[in-house]
Image (tube, rainbow over all chains, first blue to last red; front, side):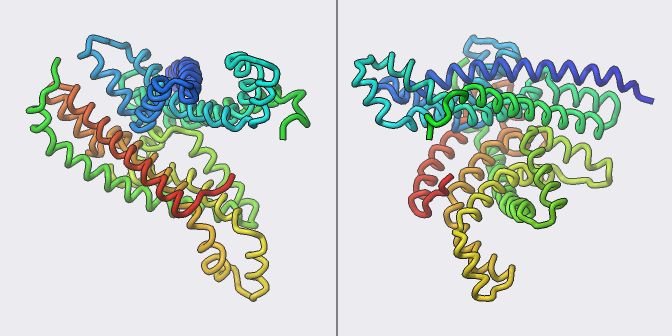
Length: 219
Length: 219
């Protein structure tokens, strides 16, 4: 009889690592998304070029290749990262590139009349962005950000391949120690699914909160 | 450590071996994803509630869990039930199932986009269900879907490095084994990244052309 309770503890530890990665990765992704998304809309050519290069580069290769690059190649350039740092870096930069396009699309979806109203009120570029455009664009971004966060959660499984003890890694440990494959893998599949449901539920309630009081304003 | 062109020349033949498997896996996976997606989309439209709900939930589940874990599941768990698959076959099934749940959404949008009048006209002409689907609905629904489908096939192509985790000898795995043999990571991993980046930049052009040729699905 296998001692399932002990193994379940291992899997729970893995779940904590996965959640930690997802949260830290999301924060980095959010920062990168706004930097690169606003960068692409900048007046300055250099900023636009930099943002476009970043987005194309990170969307063009998969998270797996980027993670290996960060973990195995960067040390030769003198930058040694722990698996957790490499994981957060690769996940954040990768998903951030996808989310940057969301930011850009949402800002562009705000109608011309809003910009004209800002000009009429003599608001500066930064003031208009901060007080008029972004608050409206944020609501447009939110649902897609939720999908991006779920993609990030799913991508965290890859870090198990650079020996970070996340859910998938722990499932492999349990598999090699017990010889049982069905139980560990089914368990983590369910845990991943529940986490994904939690994210989409959280984003939906956040959306409802932010949309409060906007009925009839937005079309 | 310096970039060494002689080493690049030495490992290139091995990497090209991997590229062949990568492309093969993508092509087979795309075909499977196209079929699975159509199956899911049709099942979700079925008047049989039990069938459409079950398939709908399964598709949600597959979309909410990591591809890597699904690959492990197919490769390590199924043998316990007597289904022993070669790595490449397991990988193709994993890719096909995972991306099938995404292409199903494309099919759904494409089918919903066929105007109601077409269904009514088909009925008026006394066509049965099979005739309606094959002669009226599908020929109109498929062309606008092509760019969106191609988009997912390109995404799948970028995810093929994951197959290295279940011992498929594709590009990433060849690169890893070369790197481990000579303990030189810079060239192999960077070449893999450059290869995927080149293909994906090329595919951006291809997608633009497809969108121009076939239009895109509104929604």
